Structures are given as structure tokens and as C-alpha cells.
Length: 166
Image (cartoon, rainbow, N blue to C red; front, top):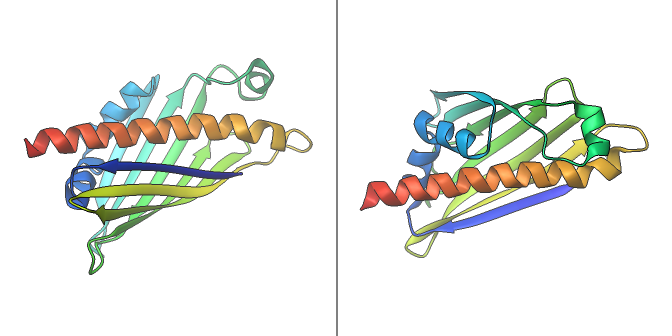
């Protein structure tokens, strides 16, 4: 199932990106998303980008029929591979999200671009739930959970970037 999450900010691409790859900012996003536990690692890459890995355990905010599949908590791993900025200042990230011990995942691309005096972030990808017969019924619920987490990350990035400007 397709997923698209967009946000705009008065902060620049580099200000948003600098916030996005700060361990403390990503930890704050985990706290605000209600993570029961989390671990964040940010590693610079040889090509001028960064790898961000976020492992978190969440209480599933899903209907009861899905909870019977996933249990009382879900462990999520999110890995982002970000590139150095291109000539226009755009940064791209490949995002892979997996739910440990569950047949659910997301593969997406994030594009952080200049927009006027600020920036715009678009995350677009596909969410898959590989459960015979029920997968298509479960995917919209999983998309809601992932979309909510991405919106929280974007909001925290924006808040932090704007505070560091003023």
C-alpha cells in the first residue's frame, strides 16, 4: 500500500537535515511517539551522507483483530541512508522500516528540498504486510501507525531546527 507524508518548514534544508541527524532530536521523537524503549545511532558515511538507525518498541495502536497478530508490543527498526546534498542542495534518503518478527515492512524514499526560503520533506513508499488473506486488511492500519510516527519525526525536526535558528 502506498504511503506519502509531506511537511514544509521555514527552516532550510541544511537546518532540517542537521536536526534530523542529531541523536537527541531523534530520541525526542521516539519519546513523543510513545516508544516504550528506543535506541538511536547516527553514523556519517564516506560519501558525505549519514546512516540513521532507530530501534524502538511500541505499544501497538491498532484494532484488536490486528493486536492478536502482533501482541502487546512491536519492535520496529528504521534505517535511513542519506546522501550528501546535490548541486541544488537536495538531500535524499532511502528508508527501510521492518517490524521484527512480523511480516510487515516499508521501503520509502525521502526527498528534502528547498522550497522558497524554507524546505519541504516528502517521504513516499510502499508498506507491505505479507499475511495471506488478511494482509490487505491490515496494511491500512500499519500505514496509519507509520504515518503517525513519520509526522512526529518531522514535527520534532521542524521545532528543533526553528529553535536553533532563533
